[in-house]
Image 1 (cartoon, rainbow, N blue to C red):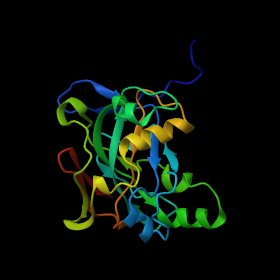
Image 2: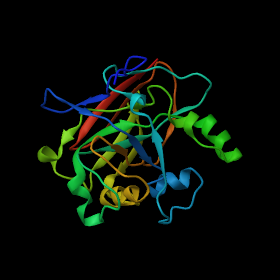
Image 3: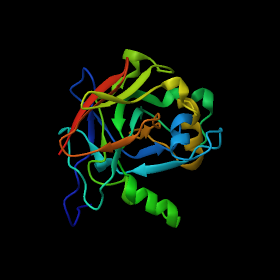
Image 4: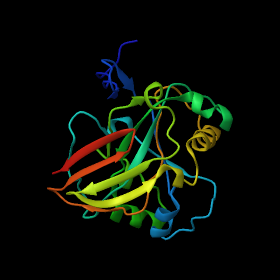
Length: 228
């Protein structure tokens, strides 16, 4: 069937050591998945059921690692996250089978219009305007599982202009990667091409135009972004 308007091109993430790309279907995000971050955001860090929100595939900042400061905000925050890329999916995936769905891993930044998020929380409204705006999720190359295995621990960090702002360890996740995949599959039918941003450690804070943001997960990937 022909279309009345041109089809949007697929969003492709580069894959380390490969000339082919990883096509993105959906982008899921896990909220408050590190205890220290839950505390700094004013929440109880006890192991409550995880909650999820979404960004759009075209929110990913892939080729040009320049982040344009978004409109309608004066308080954009950085949140560094381990990124999980799925090769397969399904519904009600058992925890013990969840890692079989993973193609590879990367690192990303969940940029957040914190002032808009605070207004939405106060009014009991969705977070879409705070989270799912243009260029709000810079993402590194995806590194296949065959190259690094499944990282269960490792230093995750972010610096702004060389100053360390966020630092934690993957083993500090409240909900581990297999559990996140399993729980998410109880709410949505996961599929190849889905991306999961797995939460951020404490230390989130503002960025302003002119800042250089560098981040990484040791042994996985690194990323550098300039705010303009």
